[in-house]
Image (tube, rainbow, N blue to C red; front, side, top):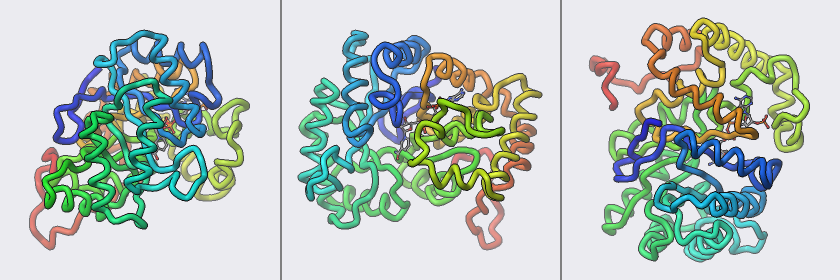
Length: 343
Ligand SMILES: NC(=O)c1ccc[n+]([C@@H]2O[C@H](COP(=O)([O-])OP(=O)(O)OC[C@H]3O[C@@H](n4cnc5c(N)ncnc54)[C@H](OP(=O)(O)O)[C@@H]3O)[C@@H](O)[C@H]2O)c1
């Protein structure tokens, strides 16, 4: 398993980690959940991601229980959770107030049966709270030893800049990572909007839904298979399911089919190619996998072997199929930098 630093911090995270959204504590419980997490750990995945909101706290409960029963040494694990939507509905049970950040973190730790998480993320921005309150509260959480680092999730570049500016002014710790959606069909924000953040603050991403909930495996090319995520969560994915029968969705399926042609030529699965493509970005800290079986974990980890196959020629062919590369940032006639330069 390759490891990368998360942001400019000293924390090393595996290039592929595993998350529990919609699965652990939801559709996957008990021994099957244990088998998946065990398979992941035995194959180099030592980072696990969850959130207070996942299955109203049941994801943290289930993942915490399994990790405890498996008896792994806490220092061998990297655990992240996310605070924003508390499992209850009171006026102070959500958002990024000092009250909810502190109370939410304490309750997450109880559910996880852990003394601390490694990284705590603000699951969304909360524009109803002064940013100084939020930055101070995450620093308090760190000072208490309940988390070592903090990050953001789906914040705009402006919001992250603001957090850093407050942190720098007050001599506090700023967010080291942004947990954002990044995959072949969703690129603008991680590849363009955040460009200055990578350069100025060294932020890295912990990417989510890098298979677009399974779309990039090709499993939805000919309809919705029984028992799949889109089948089991029809209400949640209503808009996505509707779009798959229209021009926009059909265009996505057509791209997946063309990506499969390249994957077949390379002798790899479409899923492994799609995941390796996200991991290839130097700004990616970890690609958070989702899996409902040990087999999916093993299949998806083959992405590591795909990485060296992503030559400039193959990447160019993938670009041609996708046709969605974000426009480069305007340079106003200054010559472009070397393609391999990180920033
Ligand atoms: N910060 C945020 O706002 C946010 C949002 C979403 C997710 N996340 C995090 O990111 C993690 C990953 O997101 P995700 O679960 O959406 O990732 P994903 O990789 O896009 O989707 C995972 C799902 O695709 C299917 N799948 C995976 N590998 C497959 C394979 N090889 N063949 C066939 N089907 C396969 C499985 O569902 P089925 O078998 O049920 O079809 C699996 O549960 C989450 O668990 C969570 O930790 C964060």
